[in-house]
Length: 247
Image (cartoon, rainbow, N blue to C red; front, side, top):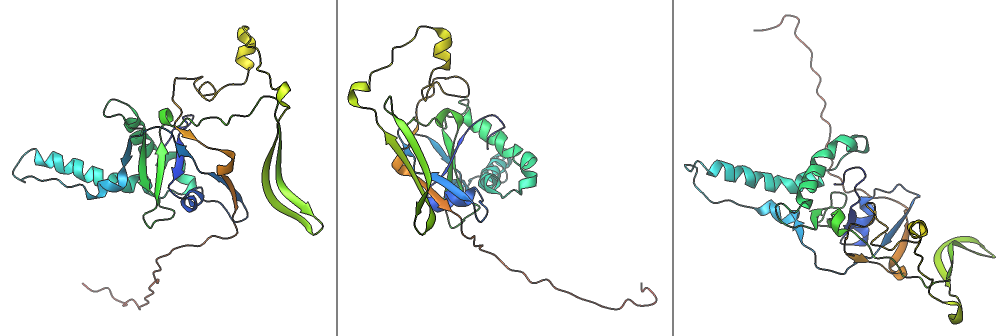
């Protein structure tokens, strides 16, 4: 739902759906996280639009327009969740990107995102997309002077095993002194940016919407993929054509 160069936040309401939505191949690893919503959001639930109705009379000239809008709203959820093959993504996503861009503007009603059904999982599972203005994630606060080690494996006498960990080696308290703020505009530009400033548009005043802690991260190794299928037999018929065509 995002055009090239415009970042949005894509999530799901459960971990299994989040993994399935990235369509990972067997043998790959998927990093997922549990994000906390820290401020009120207004989301459009497309799953509720499938039951939209319209009352009126067929003899009313304006009723045709009402029916047309009703049918559009009913089909909007299916359109947003329709599966698209990888080779067709560049063009097939254009209509949904246009709709999402329209809903993200404040000209109609202030919306922060969309809830839509997961086509990869089904069974009523839901996805959530937050528009750019509501997709800022707060940074994890690391004390000054901290050294970080990242490990993806563990090794013992029996071999090497996958194990993911992050170790913070905190500096002694007497060395944790605040860094003096420089007045040099060039040194400020290259300094470490905060969540608000480290943005694609250099800090447009967006408020933090989501937070995540190191304990909320998880890596899942994809060992196999199952499919829920609807099977159809292919019929085959053979017959001899007559020598002379009939009338």
